Image (cartoon, rainbow, N blue to C red; front, top):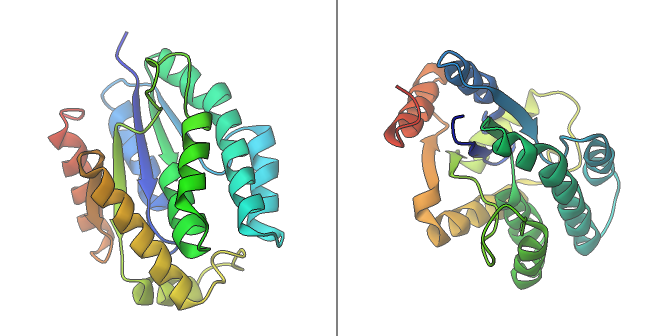
Length: 214
């Protein structure tokens, strides 16, 4: 059985990452890999209900963070860990980096508290003690917040995050930059300002560079 592989997609709203998740899934399936495509918050019935609350209901930053991590724990135990154990490729639209970027930098919540929640929630039995479940690769779709705002202006009815002012997305973007700086070996920066096919070439190239696509 092939070894399980966990890849996450990150970036501010409007960066266009979601449109490339299925394209990468198709590339892996063309090589006879079984692929699980999922998202956060969400991915399980409980986590999807929590997603609806988090994206639409007013709440303080701590409540928001707790909901995100509660959804993540359920998602890890019921979807991500079983899929990896079966040797599947897991492609996840957002993971913990988003919580540090949005709740940490965007909302201004204490990153030390988020780091504690990260340790508790992402400690799983399949990994050695002291090791957290993290993606093997995080594709960070990097786009200027000003450009993202223009894209979002033409989008569907925004959720409460998409409706935030430009300064919020500047802070979120800085949050992603801080996560990349803290763990550069896990990230591949994708220039999301490029045309879609050029963005896809960068995505495919980043995965190929790890030896995971021929």
